[in-house]
Amino acid sequence: MTRIYDCTSESTTSESTTGENYSANIALARTAIGRGALVVIPTDTVYGVAADAFNAEAVQLLLDAKGRSRQSPPPVLIPGIPTLDALAVDVPQPVRDLVAAFWPGGLTVIVNAQPSLVWDLGETRGTVALRMPSNQVALDLLAETGPLAVSSANLSGMPATTDAQAAEAALGESVDVYLDGGTAGSTYESVFGQTGDGSSTIVDATGFETNGGFLHIVRNGVISRDAIEAVVGDVLAAAPAVPGLPTISADADAAPTLAAPSQDDRTDEIQDETDASR
Image (cartoon, rainbow, N blue to C red):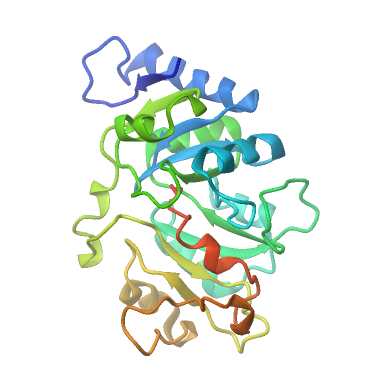
């Protein structure tokens, strides 16, 4: 039977975030991750379902719980900016500038993965989507576990969840531990004038060396295009000509500026984020 463990600072219950109970709840989640189980965590955007990024069986459990295929690999939440270089290679300077400006926070960057990494996130085509969330519960767990594969805590095709109770209703006993950090997403309600579903903004840098030196926003989210452009300037590729059209082609092989043909399947999945996505 699954349980929800209270990690909210407002709580007056026996599972409050103060003192030993909070530490015990984080330890419980860490132990679950260590044995290959799934854990639901709050992020600064939405709730995410997390697995050990270096445990292929756990990542497959995550995909199965959501009803996703290996063609939709999860993003990875990381505990700090230094982890970027541990997991990615050939990170262009504009991405470093964005990370410095918006991490921890609601920005996901798709970069080329370190080829030496021993992991299996699915059909990534040598790329990885990374984010450092700003939610303290997520950061405390990441500090204990290291990088986590995290996708939005909902069934595929359903709306992202913003509280632990909705996440449990969606995922049930496929998840061992639910950490309740209160309502997610309120951080960005007035930031940059952005409203909407609370997803992280996704920037793709995987084709930077071959597409003339451009970054592409492949999903609009809580960090506005104007805010990103203010940091990187004309390195940011132009928005789609027709409002409302997706930035990534439905036929990804016809989008030569993007290095990973599977990115169109991935972008509706990355939520922290997943902080991570969340």
